[in-house]
Length: 396
Image 1 (tube, rainbow, N blue to C red):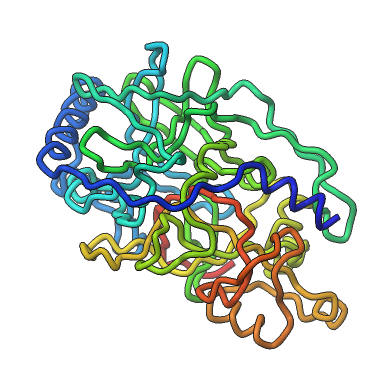
Image 2: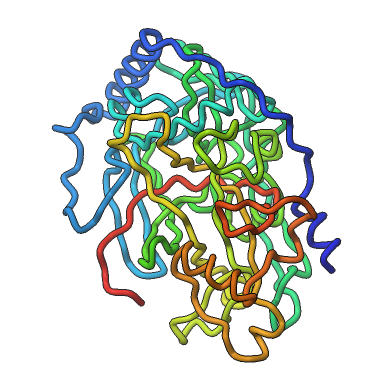
């Protein structure tokens, strides 16, 4: 079963890391001005500035300042974002969101997250070069939203791997959410609707007002719940189903698995989903792929190392929305002895690994471990999860 499940994740070999392209600050400023002006004209809504942005409560702890609304209803959280019109390779209108920039000035101006690590995607086969004309982005790739999302849980007690599954959307060979502007700046861009349909996490869309509402996933960071993030696209088919994102094979060519430090030639940042946590959603300890599969796709509540740090302009800012999965699993002895519980922080995870209760999941291929994630081996699957907010709310 380990080999079978592993094969489901490992579909495309990753490209060797390449040097990030240098960006042109002046050209980037002109690009952002054009994008914002066209979006404002078409939506009738002023372009984002700190003055025009929504004034969220301090306790909401919203990182993505351009967000128009957030709803933190437990197990049904959503975010409403500005919607941009673009063009497909055939010149048809498509609609997309922007959540991160590799350039600090661009991120501040647009009210999006800053991720200097994303610059490492430029110049690699994992990115998509785009063009701009009159403030409209034109893509080389496209997404097919027509497939029907399906998943049949496996047998208990883990319900993993699924007996059958099918992603609800797939990017073509040219599609990547790592959109490289002519200036060299990399934006995290996700198409959410085109002529074929809409993203599986789309809850509402208003093409006239240019807004879209998408479902958020819960997570843990630093002992706190409600690390709310989007799932936009995923590099392999099975995790695309488990996380309900667009299956984007091209994304697998972004470097580099198991490399999570700012000094690494990598656009990725390690995090750790749980494979076989508790499946009792009433226990307050449910977590992982098993509970998601058993309970109709509820959030797996993964463990994340850091939040966005949008005031840190340095190149040592380690945040990236391209999360490098290091799936962990409770050992048979831990399960037998009733040790399974929610893992609430990276430090707690490292302690459980050190004590022998947690290990790399059987789906992780052989290879070196990543010290950043307690020595777990990378699963070789990239989950694009822009982080939206981590509100100060009572735990559930």
